[in-house]
Length: 198
Ligand SMILES: Nc1ncnc2c1ncn2[C@@H]1O[C@H](COP(=O)(O)OP(=O)(O)O)[C@@H](O)[C@H]1O
Ligand SMILES: Cc1cn([C@H]2C[C@H](O)[C@@H](COP(=O)(O)O)O2)c(=O)[nH]c1=O
Ligand SMILES: [Zn+2]
Image (tube, rainbow, N blue to C red):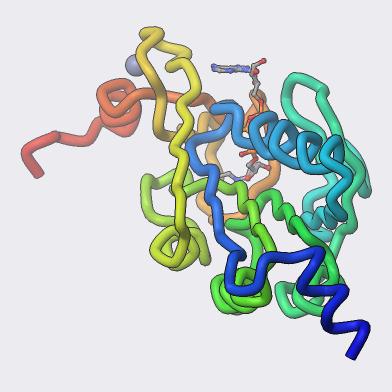
């Protein structure tokens, strides 16, 4: 079984892992994902990168940060396609994971169990402050979770919320600074006029 031996040389049997990079919008999730993936490429590992087909904000295919760093990726319609296309890689990167379906946690787990290093970036909370899509389940299964913070646009403290500044209550609403502001807890609650005792 030459093929299998070769695969085990390239991957560490049972040595896969899941790393999550989470936080609000503008917190540096994509920059950190790109940094880790580019280091993998420098190490001449085979790296496959995926994003949801629906996320066309900056580019149809590439993953692009708010700071304009970028890396080519494959846009896919669903999580099961990532399993199909990523199974032969040594590193799999996934951006905007919050938009994927509920199969994504199991797909990440299966890839990691094959010995693949899986790096997932996504919003941990939606604009209401609730856990977003498959993110909490992936975080529960991960070896490592890195929570990054933006700078609150109101007061300059670390921001963990993505505050929606336009009138629209659909959960999925692609956008940038015209629609969202990173805010700390205090400024998020003040904006929503929420009584902290309720
Ligand atoms: N309020 C802010 N706090 C932090 N970074 C910001 C802010 N507004 C704009 N940025 C820019 O956003 C970059 C991070 O972009 P990105 O990695 O795409 O974030 P994310 O993927 O978390 O939305 C920062 O390096 C900075 O240039
Ligand atoms: C909070 C929130 C965000 N979105 C959208 C807005 C952006 O298109 C992406 C997040 O991108 P980033 O790389 O983290 O800046 O998600 C949404 O659809 N719904 C929300 O509640
Ligand atoms: Zn603040």
